[in-house]
Length: 399
Image (cartoon, rainbow, N blue to C red; front, side):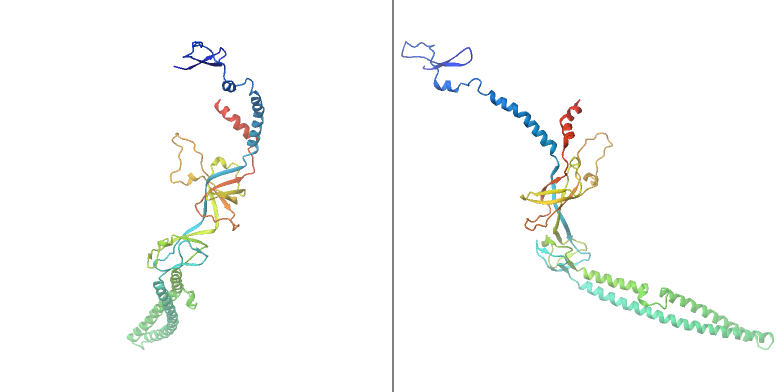
């Protein structure tokens, strides 16, 4: 079979190919062919790349110096992606129970402060107000009657005093006549009994007058409007009026209503039952949860840049409003315990609030729950000590 065989020189290079001749006896089986042009072109030229190595070795110190300078002068911006847009939101409800008579808004409608959201049937509450008004009148009349009784009792007491004086004089006269043996014993006993009855009647009238005065709060001559019974009746009337007013539910602040379809006309709502939700749109902020190691130089008032995942090409300005005084795990139901001795250190998260500037109306709206990224400019670079610690710190710990 025809074929080719390559001969390798002692230096390791391929010198050529040897072809076996089948028809011509002049060619020996081990004859060496001349090198082809393609094989010669593919051979590497000695000393062709040393200049590249020298350039790379020359650039290496420059790259190290530039990287070190970038590391030392950088790090003043703290970035965190564990952040979400938040806003004021409330479950709309009222503290009275009733049947929904009218729903004044629709799903995702923007409402202003004080706008009517829904109404309850107010007939039972109007009747309660009328009953409270009537009760207030009854109490006023009763107090005026007590004041009249008090004046009448005073007149009776004055008459009782006169009677006691008269019967006392009669008793003294009969006692003198009895001593002179002029009057009979029966006449003397009758005079003494009349005096005792008058004295007892006076004492009884005095107790009744005190009771009437107590019902008039110890001030029988004072105005009825200051009496506790009257004030209680007025308070009950005001409470009935308050409940009547709360049958009309208004927006506590401007925003957008949502989940309105959960109620409808004719539905009975328990007291304090959430009808739907209201989300504010004019005031939003960002709740971030950075690691505790990222808060070394973060302070309230520092500027921040907010990027929302929904709008990747748009940025909002802001500032750090506050940093929580405690880690998030401090408020958990089962906080971490270290008493067992089997403890693994975990980097904690510290809640932080960032105020967002939404005064530019050309920017798209921000909605509660959106994922955002926050960059806080701390104004503090890493510095040379931090660089040296990062460079040699691990080696020292290992030794």
